[in-house]
Length: 402
Image 1 (tube, rainbow, N blue to C red):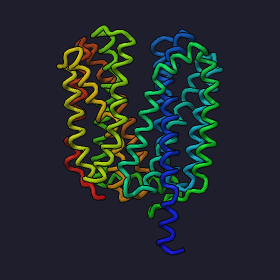
Image 2 (image 1 turned 90 degrees about the vertical axis):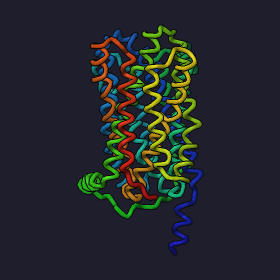
Image 3 (image 1 turned 60 degrees about the vertical axis):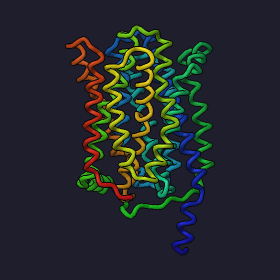
Image 4 (image 1 turned 135 degrees about the vertical axis):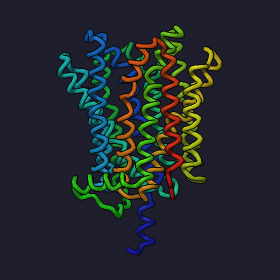
């Protein structure tokens, strides 16, 4: 087969792949969002868990999720032509863990089921994003951003009143057990859509765990890659503080009702649905730093301004502005990292950025201690903004070539 024919074959089915991955990502986030916003609070009440027990369940899921992301990076590069199998496995694990959790009555068994629940979602990102990147090297930023848009749509749907209404007709246990049915349908859909697709292989092949770890350390020797990872870490620390304490500030300090908070918080997700593909397109056309530097800077500035914003119009404007950059920037960071790696070991690169993001999720613990000392929730916004502005400063030293 000639090189031209091979390239034509590898580019076939691009749109089919894009729709499949984006829809699958939306479904995954419907499960994630509904679990965090609706199902786990019901679980806490039904099992009469205290705050530490409830927090341990969330941490168990987060811990295995972070570890699985790095393993998925290896699997995505080792079996780059089996992306469909990995995406189907991800979906089935999500459905299975939900089904089991709906039948468990013992706390410690549920704790280990929550660890299983962290594996399925984290298995999705590296093979999905690297598959898009291999099929769309010319529009990498846009497609990775559209993948993120699917996730944002899923977050909005999962956290919406739809799930709250379903809980009025079904118990949380019944709903979790029934949730295995949609993922079975989605798994069949993924298999039908992706079964005949071929993918370009990297010129840096990963045949063993030793080679995977070697490629991982090799990537970190690249100064620009290391700066992107550090910038991702700082941005994650700032974002995690914001997402943790903004709802607390709205609910406790401003004494807003739960329904009002439920309107304020989705504003950031909804605006992100539109801004993600726009930022992805701009990064493809004008370069990643053209979007990353001003976007991250504005994210940090508006986080600080939350500390000064008056309740009402000013606060709403800040939340909407933050949402325009909060989630979309993550997709551009991934595209930039793949560019820096020159398209090598793409699943590994995705896992590296997600791994850095995961490491930043522990920052609310430290900031929480600060708030306990000052008794001012608003101080968390200053810390959040400064961390994100540090991430911006690191980006100036990054050298990205398409």
